[in-house]
Amino acid sequence: MCEWRTVERAGELERLAQDGRLATEMSKRGDEAARDFLAVCNSSQLPAVDAWLARALAARTGHYGDPAARAAAKAALPASVQAHAALLAALARTDQPTSGAHLEFVGRLAQADPAAAAALAAWLSTALSGGAGQDVAEVHDLREWSNAGRSLNPQYFDD
Image (cartoon, rainbow, N blue to C red):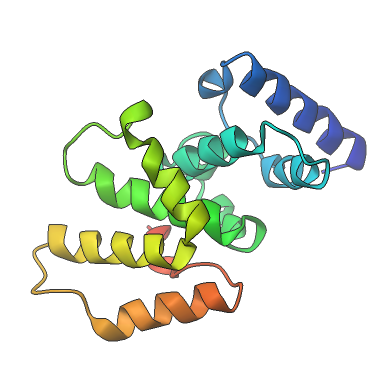
């Protein structure tokens, strides 16, 4: 995305977040760069944009409906946003409501400790799929990915 378009999109996302209308917007190609611009500018709306991106990634809405966009997000989004998305996707499988303020803790958990959020998402996914229990090696792999500053386990966003 051209630099001026990135700045323009960052401004649009910031305004939508300030007005409480970000949830009505669909994600678009280049939103990861706009998010990075907001981070560089230390925008007060960055947490709202991060949560919005995580919800879009977890729900596979907007441009995240495309598997290539989800794959690109692994390299472009910080571990905290990826962990937030993975945990939301796992929680969605519980058939309980996953929208609204009652799950605001998910973003805080992912921000505070992306590896713990990713491990919880992995455990939930295993438990909800009828697995006998969490594979310890898988949790270790998730922690290693996160501790190395890499993206989370690819299984969360693959088809």
